[in-house]
Length: 177
Image (cartoon, rainbow, N blue to C red; front, side, top):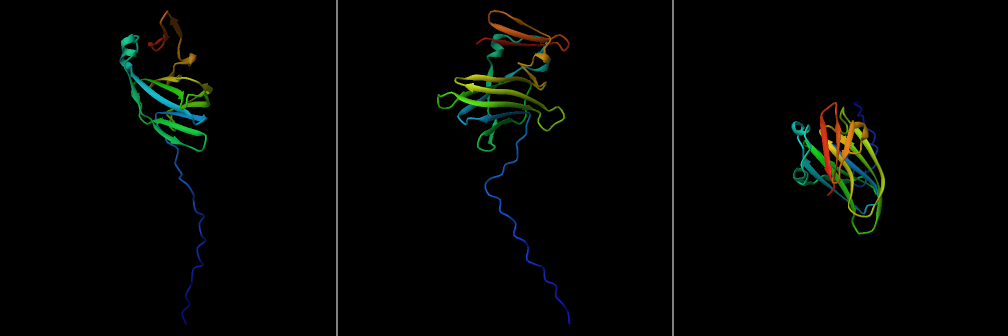
């Protein structure tokens, strides 16, 4: 007589509930933790590596274009804005309250996340009451405007600030608008 082997009933796997989104990666990622009433905008100004030994003119700095990052919500209090592929130039991240009331959040900029040249800049916690520049970063070099170690000196005049690095020949000029 032949015996049949029967398999025991498979254990029922627990069901996942809700949507699970893997963390997005890109050349630039701004992580906002805190009040959800903050609107983030990103602008871009072309500044090729071949011209970085000369300062940009005021007209060149005004040629900014809006960039639409990919937004994702990671939990109740954390949002991410990702620029998947950054071009040569300056990216300006600005925040403003959505409903006119001041909002408080913590900002972290991740550059080349999950790659060999990854850099994480903790911008810090800020109370945003009007349109506020949160970070400026020069790509593909991953240099932040506020990173004093990236520059060997700076010059200020009545309407602008120029930061430079004598070793690399970089000049980065920002005008007071």
